[in-house]
Length: 170
Length: 451
Image 1 (cartoon, each protein chain N blue to C red):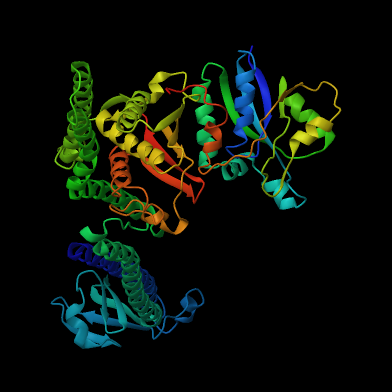
Image 2: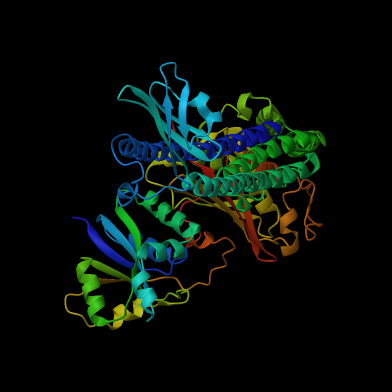
């Protein structure tokens, strides 16, 4: 059975490391990954009426982020059935409950230490998930991220040179 | 441009002819209607006049006027004829118009602004022509007004067509002139210039884009041809130095047969390397002479190319270390195939990797490979001296060397060559660097797509 998994993101290539950590350390279950970011719509009627998730996602996902997602899909072709981004547009407890229930998530992946680089209007859903005491919450999977400071030049550096080189010809 | 003008003028002429014909048609239709309608009205009044004159009291004309309005300047007339159609008696008829009257039947005619309707009658053995004449107020006033109105509308219409056509022409031609001016600026000395695609919309945007892509190919070919001697010297220099070094060392004193064999083996390896480079350079020299400016590209496994390039680099200098991260290799190995020439790609990658090793104190290059939807991505990273920010835009120029590279030998040939080779494969090579911290070269190549 395919499990749907919620993974927090800030639409940077760096945040895709959480996805990699999860995939590398979980069992061989087939998964559908939903990269979710919190987005505060504000209170203006224009925002509420004119809001379309696709437009915002198109604006927030840069080319490198999409390439990173594609690379993960190529790397874990047999396990990642689907991978896409989504927005949570409220911190309201009932909304969060309905979002998780409606999305039929089986797992939520939360990093232990990770500094998200949120843009304006975005909010941290990791803290929200940790503090939510909701009934019927999906299983929370904690992934441990290395806290080493990245010295990335290219945005995709962080995506590759993460740990000790596990495969080398030296 | 001339034929373009001709087409435009032809279009203007067609529009003007159409407008004139339209106006003429309206004028003709309305005039025709006004005439036939007025003649009908005259005929009715003529019949009534005849009835009154021939059968009733000739002086009593009020009874008909109570039902029909009198037309402008309306006159009735009666002419009596003999058998030979000569006038016997005439009342109120202008005899100069006698020729135009049909002596046997009905006639409608117009003289100046006066319209006439006549008819032949026979009564009590006598012959009569009874007629009515009147001025057509609609013709004299309203139609004149309409005629003036249509003439003014016609003039304005023609003026509008001409002005709008010229404006449209200008708005069409202006961006084309802009394109022409931009293209004129591009010559062999500044082939790096590109047309600004964002300035144009629609077809012209596509044209500018196509032109830029053509310029990319031309620039790559041109640069490769122009710098072929430098590239050849640069690539052949290292294996030759290696061969000379090994031979010199072997000949410096007497050695055992085993040592000579070992030296010879090293020389054979270096010569093999030299041969590989020569064939790669020959492929490079052929660029631009092939049909469609495309070399005979074949599907190549990029991971294999990277491994071969690493071997080559390590063979050149034993102090160079290469750490490879293949953790993101795709499950499907087909995704690692690119369309290209393995020796050329190997040449490009080995140049970048050896640069990474050369310019870092630990002589280590980190190489990573991954595949996205439509291509492969190779990252070559070092923790070396980096490139000063101000100089980063010049690093693709042949012979350019950054200001912080004096203590490292080199010619500034390797990177431009690598970039040209990647561009030949429709790929992209980009560099990000921080002075003193290191440099990352990102190479993206489109995936092989079977036709």
